[in-house]
Length: 294
Ligand code: GUN
Image (cartoon, rainbow, N blue to C red; front, top):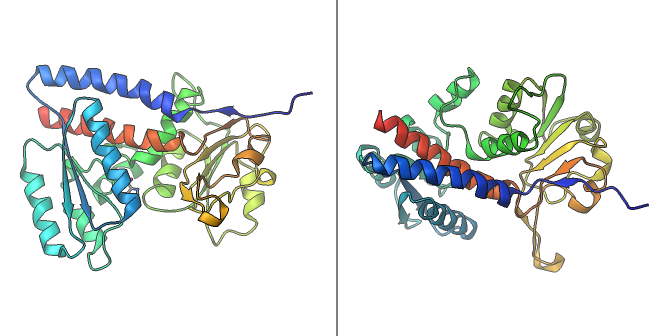
């Protein structure tokens, strides 16, 4: 008998499909004289952030969007960063503004995120956009949770008359960027939602309830096979680099090999949620450009 393995949700393939649709919409907007534009701002030299922003700028080019990258030294003051954001807010060629996180410690992250015009906040981090999601009228939704929902749509769990009614979704992690908006999106899809975090008692038992399990904890291979209900849909948001002593490779928050034998569906790392996150950024920038065109 061959061992059970989960169906892999291929983030690269799904991202390519969604990007084709976005590219077609960009072409249509351009024919009306509007080129969607994204400004990416990076302060400092964080190596992971440098990779992320490079990927974001490259993704824009592939779908025909305009993008500008602002790389500022780590010594940049908060006032200087706020002045750049103000200029970008006023720049009619820029529809989306993204300030890569984390910003250096001497800069107040909250003040920076609130300085981005809500109508250009393609990260969905501004309180106005977070609030809009909360009341069920989403405009810009944080890209990673939005990408996870696209994956659930792709496997037919939501959309086209399907939703998560009667299903239990468990989100492990409560960040403003992923855990909280993810839980809200699942709730709006009619799931019964549990948010777990470092203070949760008997995390394994909570996770084992999940028909849909989203791991966003930032700890390598944290979710193990014994924590997963047979047949569950497991979405792995984690991107963790193992120490050189353990091979130095990228792994998720899910122990892929173990969970693969229990789950019904599973996203790989890399090639799962990551490409969807960038695709949703393009999608949000397109929405911003369409809003500006009205
Ligand atoms: N740092 C880690 N994830 C993200 C993200 O989605 N957006 C921004 N701006 N910074 C991040």
